[in-house]
Length: 362
Ligand SMILES: [Zn+2]
Ligand SMILES: [Zn+2]
Image 1 (tube, helix red, strand yellow):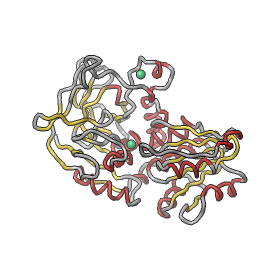
Image 2 (spheres, protein in one colour; image 1 turned 30 degrees about the horizontal axis):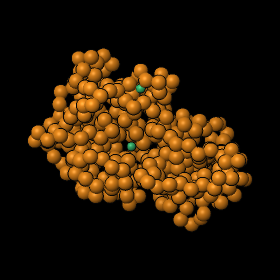
Image 3 (tube, helix red, strand yellow; image 1 turned 90 degrees about the vertical axis):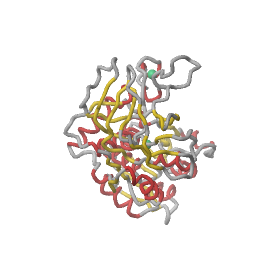
Image 4 (cartoon, protein in one colour; image 1 turned 120 degrees about the vertical axis):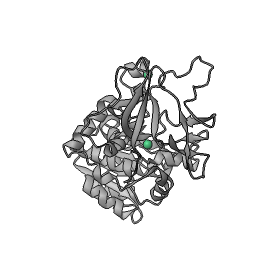
């Protein structure tokens, strides 16, 4: 199959032929229909997070089941599915207490000391999978607990967005922070994930939703998708501006960029008792410095992993929201491209030109 190969940080991906294995007992081969290009892919391409090479990146995808292992009963060839990196085992303490997104995943090793089985190769040499998915490729070989079956009237390119960015942002608002009706919210960063958090806050019934960014076009889109106010952080100090706008600060702040300084801005924009949720991927080694006295007023700072999802429950709900017009995804796809356009998609993302590029593989 054709795949975009990662060779190491700061190098362009190249389109190559890669061999893909047959599915093992609990695995599924999915023909990739569409894959979003997510900011977390970019973190690995830029090297702010390490990953072994060569590898096939990509983790925000939807497609059609092509083949299943002999123990798989959940799906059959022809089913439409979304892949999710929150692959769960279903039997561990995290899974059984309602936190499958914190599960370490099903055991894919043959013995405790054996390396994971290599599923992709190029000329006999191993090619690493990325987040158990590797969607910048014509096919994905995944564990059955990394997919959710979806209704067939859902367009697969918009379904792909739900695979990561939308679930991360909407889930951060609905599941992690549990935004309450009538509350006030500030979302720092109006890229794909930030726009999804804004929509999550709107769906939750927040009365004031403040979008913060330095790119004017992104703030315009944020207003279209549910923000009630905007703050251009290139012109104003956002924390003070937000405290002034809300009479003391917001109930919930979200950091959707992945910068330690922006976490501070988000934290200082909350009122006493307010909660700051970090969604962005802060580069390895970076520390966040917060003045300790603010915890006396019960301000909270918390992380969010993939929107604290139960993706087999959440994703079909988000699809219903989309088909009812309550979750808007059409506007979040700025560009569509082919697999060959993956490097251009990274450039456009870095330049702040797009909310999302979706690569169409079918
Ligand atoms: Zn992602
Ligand atoms: Zn588990």
